[in-house]
Structures are given as C-alpha cells and as structure tokens.
Length: 251
Ligand SMILES: Nc1ncnc2c1ncn2[C@@H]1O[C@H](COP(=O)(O)OP(=O)(O)OP(=O)(O)O)[C@@H](O)[C@H]1O
Image (cartoon, rainbow, N blue to C red):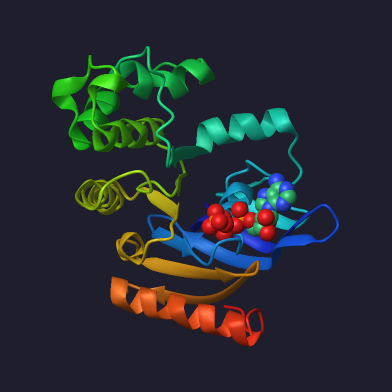
C-alpha cells in the first residue's frame, strides 16, 4: 500500500496557450498529514488542489491518490474516485438548505448509492460538535456550525484525503480558530489526511507542513511553523517575485 495519500509528479497545467498555472510540480503528501498550500494570488494554489483532487486534469505529469493514478481516467471514473477517495470543504459551505444536518452529512452516501455506516456517522457528528443539532437546517446554524457540517460530510466516507479550499475564508477569527482546531484534532485523532489551500498564515500554522507556490512552482516549504515564520516566508516570496527570481528554486 502507498505511504503517500497524494503524489504529484511533474504536473503542469496550462490554460489556453499561455497561462502556465502549474509548471512542473512534484510533491508527495504522506498519509495522516495536514498540509497547507500557500502562495500569492494567481500562484496556482486552486489549480494545484483541483489537479490533486481529480477536479481538473493536468496538461502533463501524473497524479496519484493512494495507489490510483488519475491521469488516465475518464470523467465518470474521476467522479467515482472523488466520491470514494476524497472529501471536500469549500469556503462557501455548499450545504443543501432544505436538508437537515444529518441529511447533509449523509449526502455522499446518497450520491454514491452506498449504505451509511451509522455508528461512524454518529461519531463524526459528535466529533464536530453537532450532536445536539442533527435535525437543524443550515439556516438555523451559524457560519462556523455550517462549516462543521461540511467537515462532517467530508469525513463521513472515510476518504483517503480531505481537500479544503480556504475553509475559513468566510468566518470570523474566533470561529476560524475553532474550525481549524477541529481539522487539526481530526488529523491527530483519526489519522485523516488533510490538504488545505489558504491565504492566511495563522490558518496555515495549524498544518504540519506548509508548501509555498509562486508562479506555478513549489519554491519553499516549512514544517511545524508558527504564523510569524509562515508570514515571513510569504513576504520573502513577494520580494523574490518583485526581484524576478521566483521559480529559480524548487523544493
Ligand atoms: N479556468 C481557467 N482558465 C484560464 N485561466 C485560469 C483558469 N483557472 C485559473 N487560471 C489562471 O491560472 C493561474 C493560477 O490560478 P489559481 O486560481 O490556481 O491561483 P490561486 O493561487 O488559487 O489564486 P487566488 O489566491 O487568487 O485564488 C492564474 O493566472 C489564473 O488566472
């Protein structure tokens, strides 16, 4: 069995003829790790996440989730793979307003026509702190609670990896801290692999490892860093960009 949850090898993504969103990204994300992906606006973070998660197809290079290689899959196979092996948390919580908390969390099973594991469902809802709100609808919940529902929905299928795109972008500082603490705790206690794109050094400091992208290239990384260190690396990236030296070095 693969030791990595996700592996990208020499991945490029070019939009049209001239927009080189990823320019040869090679990286392994080990199982049970919490990885943050940072970089200036337009550096390729979302493209990285989309290629890693099978939401988008690289122009060249290979992507593996566990032992499965994505690049030769057609759209139907990719949809199935995402349902089975990936969980998603987005900035906009993407819950269905007419469904209760439990029904929203169960959605991946309904879509996959799979039987839910009821004990795990109850545990996941408990873990995200929504045990007393299972019959509420999203409009009856705060933003932080709605994001907890989205996290429970991402975890309930026991995916190989949870991909989070700016999961705290719509939350205030305190609520963001609670949601990030929850993600951290899920990684620690269940060994879930999480990959998170963020602009926020504080959010990234919850991760074990932070990857820095600049102009489609992985240019730096730090492990177990605090927000100040991460912010400093981001500033250095900005300076290198201004000096035109970004992309010269890769991890
Ligand atoms: N569907 C698309 N068609 C054309 N160009 C695209 C498309 N998606 C992204 N791009 C371009 O690819 C580059 C990388 O975009 P991407 O969204 O991955 O960056 P990002 O780091 O996530 O940016 P941000 O932090 O602003 O969300 C940018 O130049 C962007 O304009």
